[in-house]
Length: 227
Picture 1 (cartoon, rainbow, N blue to C red):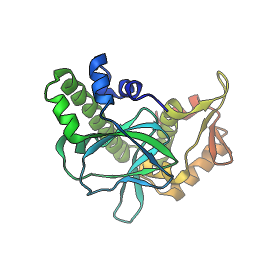
Picture 2: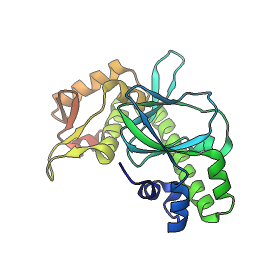
Picture 3: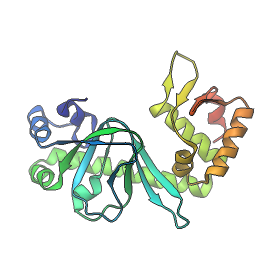
């Protein structure tokens, strides 16, 4: 388990905190454990806390009109969620569900606001982090409009490989632990279309499968599919 003060330094919102400020905020954090499938919060619920993940995975998702999941993000250790409701207190705009057993710390909105009201550095880092989130959302919408499913899938596999992939040796294959359902949600496509494109990539020897793990064998060739 990551120590609360170290965890704070991994979160962009708190990365530039002075040591004494980190200790102050760390003392306000409350530990929480979720089992696989547990809900951290649901769309429409009152927002009152920011959550920082120390172990496990949380997926942020919304339901499409036809009932399919659209996954906005998959968060892992060092990531955070719930920052919008933390700042404005409005209802949650999406669901947050544990992909696996997950441990995290929560920071209550009242405690947080009392802290940032007297800390200009904290305000600046918060604005920067929110700007990055908005840009990421814009990129997602741009991909939906201008890239086909094959290109969107290739782009997402590359992104996951760089952020969450496991490579046993330098220059070797990259392993990803992600389901086809989650991939479909991440790129705004159906599971069937993702399954079709994955088979195509395997036939071209760009990827392979090991149980439920996707193995990227040729990252450079994958990059060419989005040019």
